[in-house]
Amino acid sequence: MSDRALAYLKEVAVAKGEPAWLDKRRKAARASFADAGFPHRRIEAWRYTDLARLMDKTDWKPAQPETGAILPPEGRSNPFGGIESWKLIFVNGFFRADLSDLAALPEGLEITSLGQALAAGTKFESIFDATGPEAIGSLADLNAACARDGAVIRVKAGVKLEKPLELIHYTTKGDGCASHLRHIVELGQDASLSVLEAQIGWGGHYLADRFMHVNLQARSNLTHVRVEDEDTQALHLTTLLAEIEADANYKATTLALGGRAGRMQSAIRFKGEGGNAVSDTAYLLRADQHLDTTMVADHAVPACNSAAQAKGVLAGRATGVFQSKVVVAPGAQKSDARQMSNALLLSRDAAMNAKPELEIYADDVQCAHGSTIGELDGDALFYLRSRGIEEPIARQLLISAFLAEVLENVPEELGREPLRARAENWFETDAEKGGSA
Image 1: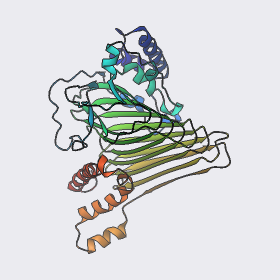
Image 2 (image 1 turned 90 degrees about the vertical axis):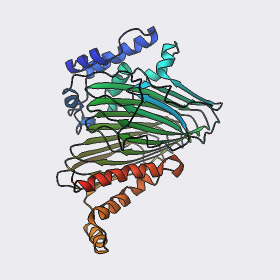
Image 3 (image 1 turned 90 degrees about the horizontal axis):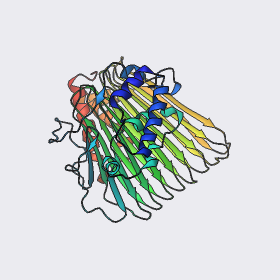
Image 4 (image 1 turned 135 degrees about the horizontal axis):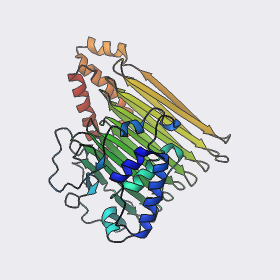
């Protein structure tokens, strides 16, 4: 049993004043997490990210609701602000109805604040039962013990929504504040939805933990665009569990920029033949930032496709991690799985750890993985300089081209240009600091 985990639970976990069914689940989650503790390097899936050490440096306390106006600093505004959409806004881990826009929801789309629903006595037992594979570690239990709010999003069978839904998280308080959110997204058969998610923070040292459980019924389609832009002193944890039924499709594109240290982990489980899951990630790190991107795809049934791609740009003393594991179960023939990590190191002090894995128990499959780590192409840089282009601009052009394969996957109507602008802002700051910030 971990003393560190017990101390955290004592300060942050929800421990009283809840209905019996939820109290039972909270107690089970607390016991499981207290026994396992925070993940550490001795756990293989966490060998590059010592969360236990990171958590040990702070006297954590639960974040409190913020009722005032939200005024993000320059460069930290909502990247999807100009898109017509429904909006769910959370501040410091709590739903803000006054900032959200859920007017005129169409028939077949149900959106509920988890906190408000629990307060009204609604049972959401399945939301707190999801845990995920071993690689996820104890974070599912930590979140189940501590989450006070979140979003419950349900799209009924046959409902196809063209207007996207924004899921925006602001963190405005540092000083060791910890927030935990738990979301569920359920799409019925033949339904479709686009979710634009952003985590934006400022104010110093805090912990932002988000857990999302996605359930896609047969032939449904979910497009998920994410931006991670935390305070440079923040610790962020993101866990996604996706269960995909026959011929359903999940497509995610992520741009990650901020945070002192973070882990974005996802677990995909195919439950019906013909399922598809694509995850593209672009990340830009500088100074002493650390980002761990870990993915697990469980091909439990035949004829499913998964693809994971990550492109990273690392300056200063930044460290990147890419771990991706594909498990093809016995009998899961015709599985197709691809994993690729590409990293650009802009300084000699930057580091990249890549660990793609395949665990295959079927013989009629197409599975591949790869990894590259390198510098900007000197010949290409020289060519651009010889055409009169200044070095900072030349570097930006080459980095933009490197990331384009990921960012171009975002449909224009879902924020392609705002994501490009977010990346360009990073380029400009990097150029001001000589490319080695």
